Image (cartoon, rainbow, N blue to C red; front, side, top):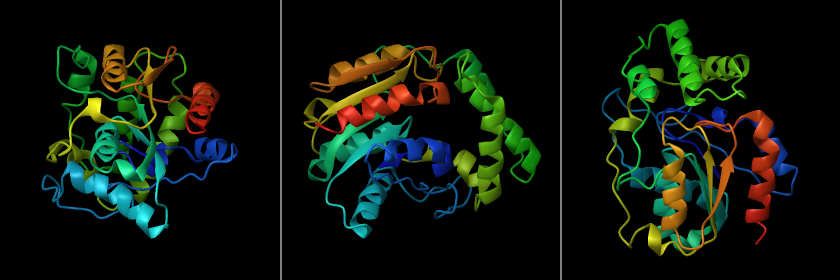
Length: 251
């Protein structure tokens, strides 16, 4: 089950990537988190839910599909979503894969100045062109200067995402405002399922030491560093990612 991070609908798990995973004998689920795509939406600036609610959404989808246990893959903010699942709802989790995320806390390096400056901007949600340009530019910042960045492909996803969003203003604003309530049954050191950490070498949002710290905090976790990648999963590295994911979820 692929869970995306803040302000991103399921479209950012590209259909071609999902098909590549499915071709390796995997049943792939992607979905729109609250306030993205066609999912439930809340007033801009007033999210009526917490991180735990988003975790329970994941489990609720599994319930509807009749799936008792799943391999969870969480990207960026969704690392916290699947991490909470792996701690408080461990019986529903077969494995965890953290992509471009962070354990938070400690003396980890900060987000890049370029990222912080860029995300301080607020495009007018009613101006579709401005929102598409903002998202396209954000993805360039996310790339951290990666040679794999494909602006044309990113723009196409941004255009599709904005076009299908129920409330793009809430998409852009609400996830960073939710209550990040933590697990009740322990912490990362209590995760007992197989865990893979995937992290871009040039990630400007959560620099590589975040991935290394996450690997160190989860017992038995393994780390895959995506060479020359930023806060993303660029298409030229899909085979590397899929091979690692399939091996991880075969155990």
